[in-house]
Figure 1 (tube, rainbow, N blue to C red):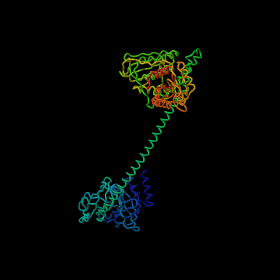
Figure 2: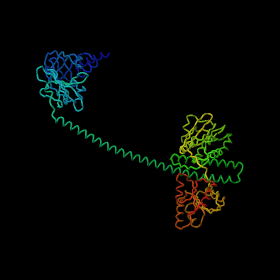
Figure 3: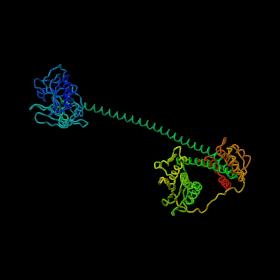
Length: 636
């Protein structure tokens, strides 16, 4: 079918008039195929030339050039316009098609064709096959062959190399005799581009006039022009690249600066939000928990007492939630401060377990613990944070376990690392949730119908606390029979403290105290707590009222709220210290009593002139201890 298609295409081409390009395509598609040809072309190398016999010549059209074999009936000169009728064939000796002419008709002459200006690499690649071309090259080898053929090789600056040859009758001068080329000479070659072995191309000269020496300026000026053009282009590209790069760097730097400013602003706003949220929530909680504690210390009994205890548990749960959020914020911002102390690890575990014994007993669960012999009696670490991790794990174990019990195992991972395991007999955690439970705000059961509440922050905070303490927290195993959480923390073996410093539980005498507080509920609570301890109190609703009372009365101590209208506690403390410096009056103890509990608050308050700082809500015992410490400390 393919062969029939080629024949059909050739017949159509013949009917309309063939082109050299169509003839080549037809013959090369089916090597050895033949077919009719009807071609109009211009002679480029006529019969009777030195290289050609009277029976062969070359002609070309817009599609290329081709060899034509005749019966020798007439001589054709270069530039003749002719119509050829015959058959095309594949000439194995030249590895290209050619035409066997049956009839040649002369048309109106057009004159000799101008050669195609071609680069040596393009000629070598066969882009001008069979066509009259002109190219420039440097002679590398001159090699006369026999008496009738001369060969030389030329190459250009790109390294492309090709063969040039001419023929002359025996006994006549060499084709190169008039020029006598030597290696290193630059010459211009005009001739027919023809194939040779291995599909490489060569140039066949038509006469000695096709070979001439190239003047130096012809070589120099193109080279200089192109060298200058390339240099100019490179310089322009480099300048453009530098300008573009600088603009890009400047733009990206500005974008990064804006992003950093936005991130810093976002962090600042987040810190402000957390500080304000802490203050706004702690302030009413202080009143709720404090008043509940006062009522529970009274004579309320029976069901009313039980209801009050449940209300206090709910308020304490809310306080714990607030502390979790603040702790997570500190850990996330890498602002968590560790405070190592010397403590007994066994006593710590025992005290935490005792906290959950009543809750476990109400559910019918057993809760016990055991420790290994290798545990040091005293270690140094952040006891408060270690207690926080253990409390969270035991709380979860008791909360999620309905039958069986909870076991705590304490041992040493290595001489400097404590290992604690909390195992329960609860429902276990699905395998797909093993990693999710340590993500913030994620729970194993996050559905709206889940049985147990919580924010999902406990394990996330505990895991990060363990990392901050030099260890890690992980889920050892979990199945339908329960879960086992383990964590490690770095500890340093320590000696038993030589003495235990105790704070006096309450001042030795009644004190005259100025309470500076704007919240009415907290006013009543603090005044009640102080009156219960036998102290005399005065009340100021803001900083301005406090300064007026200090100017007219003397006090043993001031309890100062921080966030108040008109004048806050920080400015008030600063003005009190300034007044004392001017008058030479003795320093009056000031205790900050505020709902602000973020990192840096204590330092800010002490820098303003306060002597101590108590975050709300504050218990009766904590307040009494702070009062005793303040009046016992020497003042400057």
